[in-house]
Amino acid sequence: MRILGINALFHDPAAALVVDGRTVAAAEEERFSRRKHGKRPVPFSAWELPEKAAAWCLEQAGLRPEDLDAVAYSFDPA
Image 1 (cartoon, rainbow, N blue to C red):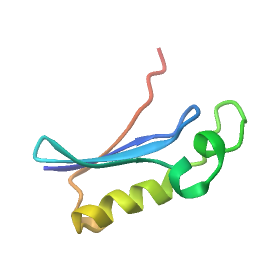
Image 2: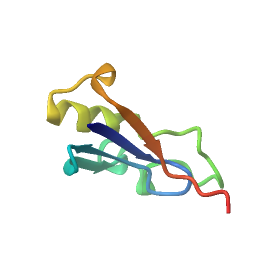
Image 3: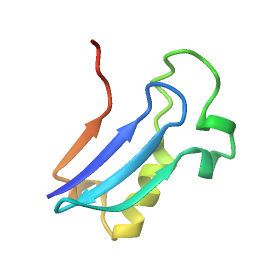
Image 4: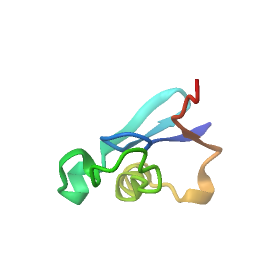
């Protein structure tokens, strides 16, 4: 099972890739965008996804988006 996890709701957007229960790659968008906390300081800026971090995670594992079994997005409305 290959799962890409995305965190983008608040500051420090990031992506992580888990393959068969093991974390094989993880990165914060800040590493690629060179912006502190990875995105503009606008509350609830969920539209700014960690696209570069997600692409890097997939590249590290030699996967393409269509190879994923699931994508998980961190959000808890409660």
